[in-house]
Image 1 (cartoon, helix red, strand yellow):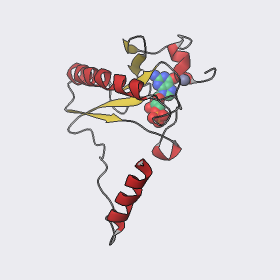
Image 2: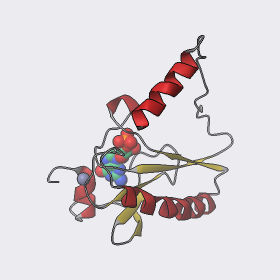
Image 3: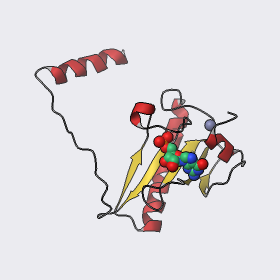
Image 4: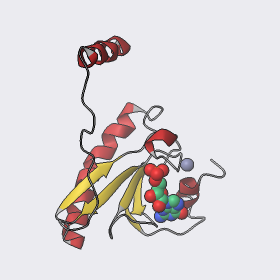
Length: 137
Ligand code: 5GP
Ligand code: ZN
């Protein structure tokens, strides 16, 4: 993809602090980290988000994410790790090349975790359960 910023990094056209690479996957530091050590893990092939990324590629990403999470936690002495993927503008996706964030977290880093802010009204939970199950069929 000609103008994709991550494809440019993969092609070596713009620099990045790479921390992992194999034939299908690359990982590098996020240039605007939530915390120091924040990394992005992505397939080298250009897919937009989770929806169009092939299953086998998504499956290959997870062991790399695990390995990197352990390494990053150790390297920056983090207290925890968030693994996060934004899919679509409403979910905060800014770069439309499939990628997963590994964010080291510290006990006192001040970032708020999302909590269930809303409840379900009567039957709403069952209705959405049924809708999701129907959408899977
Ligand atoms: P998204 O919101 O799409 O899930 O996250 C995109 C991430 O890519 C952001 O956290 C942003 O800081 C990072 N990013 C954007 N452009 C570049 C870049 O040129 N180099 C690096 N290393 N990270 C980038
Ligand atoms: Zn791309």
